Length: 204
Length: 162
Image 1 (cartoon, rainbow over the protein chains, first blue to last red):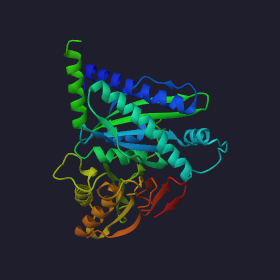
Image 2: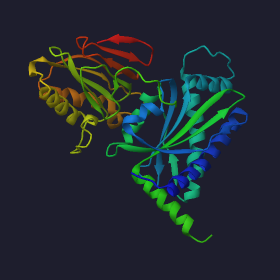
Image 3: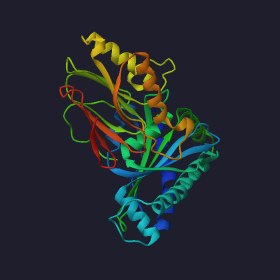
Image 4: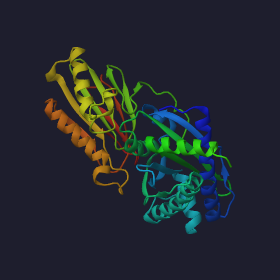
C-alpha cells in the first residue's frame, strides 16, 4: 500500500476536519480550551507497531466505522491512564487521582469516546458525502501497544502495512492528553481517496 | 504513543516476525497476539514468533504472522540449525481478549491459542508451559541460555516465570 504526497495531504486535511469537530465536543464537555496538533498520516509496518505506542497503561476506546463503507476500519480514542482518570474526575466531580479504574470510569470514557468519535466521523463523512457511523464502543485498559495491536489484528489479515492517522488533543487546564487514531480498512482508504480526488476535480 | 523506547538488550520480535538463535529475545505488547517459543535445551538455542492471527489462508510472505505457518517454519529452522526433534519443547504466552465487547470471531486471542495448540499437536511438539488468555496484555523475555525460562510481565504489574 503506497500513498503519494498529494494523497497523504488530502487525508491529513480530512483528519484535520474530523479532529477539530472531536476537539470542539471535548472542549464543550470539559469547558476548557483544547489544543490540537497537526494531523499526522503515517504508513507503519505491523512489526513496528510497538514503537509507535508505548507500554504505558492507557484507556483505548475503539469504534468500528460503519455505514456505506464496509468493512470500514476502526477509530480509536487513546488516553494514558492519568489523563483518563483526570478526564472522568472532571466529569464526575471527583479529585481522587490515586485510584484504579472502576465501572463508572469505563462508562464515562465510553460516552466521551462516543461523542467525540461520532463528531469525528460525521464531519469526515459530510465532507465526503457519504454515511459513516461509529459502532457501539469497546474499551480496554491496558498497555497501549498491546491493546492497539489487538485492533490492528482485525484489519491487517491480508496486509503488512497499515496507515495511521493520528491527532493529539490536549487540555492544558485539566492536564489531559488524548489521541484520536483512524485505522481505515484498505478498501475504505481506496474509496476515500477516490472520493477526495473527484472532489478536487469537480468544478466548484 | 511515545517515541522509540530505549534500545533494550536482545532482539525484539515484532508482530508477524520470528527470530532464531542463542541470544536474548523479547516480544513486547502481546494483546491478542501470542508469543510462541520453541526451545532446544540441549543446544541452549531457540526460536520466538510473534503470532498475530490463526490462519494464513495460503499467504507465505510473513510466516511468523500466522499460527499455521509459524510452527512449521520455526520447527524446520531449528532442525536445520542442528536441533533434534526430541529436544524441542514449546511455551506460549499472550492471546488475551482485551476488549470484552469483542466476542466470537472477534476473539482473535482465543482463536490464536487454539490454532497454535492444534499445530503443536500435529508436529508432536510438547507444550510445557503457557500463560494465556484473560484480559491483560503481556511482554516476554526469553534467554535461551537459561533453560528456556520465559519471564512474562503482565500489564497489571505482575511478573512470572514460566
